Amino acid sequence: MQRPPKLTAAEVKRKLLVILEEGSVIYSWHCHEESMVARNVSAQDVEDLLENGHPSEDAEWSEKDGNWKYRIEGIDVEGDKLSAIVVIFDSILTVRVITVF
Image (cartoon, rainbow, N blue to C red):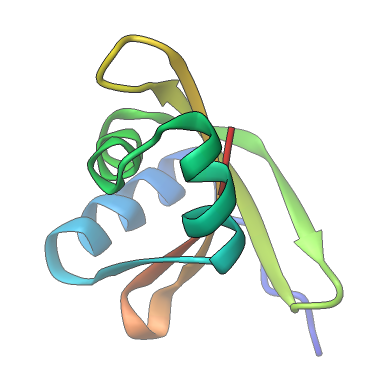
């Protein structure tokens, strides 16, 4: 599989805003059942982070999954630091949240 080009932070932000408006946010089992529970993070916290957080310029390529993983950094509603690792699926207007920390 040929590796698609990595998105810039600005492109990630634009795509996240479109997905939040018109698409879907889905969660990995690990994220929903483990990391969100351990951090007491709600889906609203995650969606606020995706809307208001800042994508890092550092993305990680997953050979196993064949996609780029992007880090979004910001704060939750209580003002605590919150970060998420996400994968963007352009063709189906979906963002998959892999983990939060």
